[in-house]
Length: 82
Image 1 (cartoon, rainbow, N blue to C red):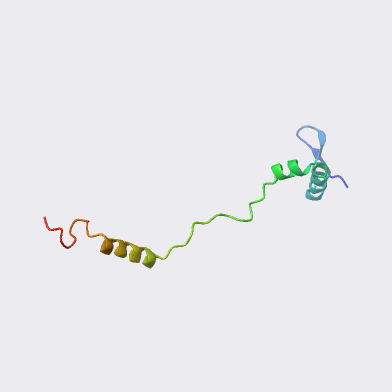
Image 2: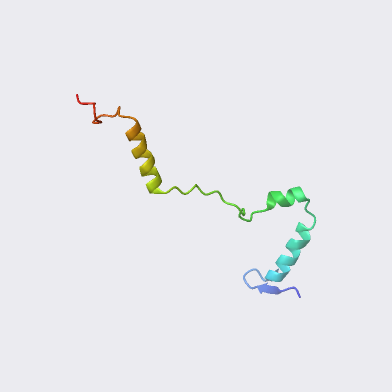
């Protein structure tokens, strides 16, 4: 049933559809869409979100320590007294 309410300010009847009626009309409109238009109008969030890789802090510390041990050219390293 169509819900019609009276707008007392303007003195006329105003059509106010129910949520069910709105959904039904939207489905009628969407039934005419091509797959391309449907994909374009899809506003749902994407299923897969990219997240940065997880890196353990201890792995970074080990890598830095090994790099410094292999390269004695940084200031303050053994044999680099100025």
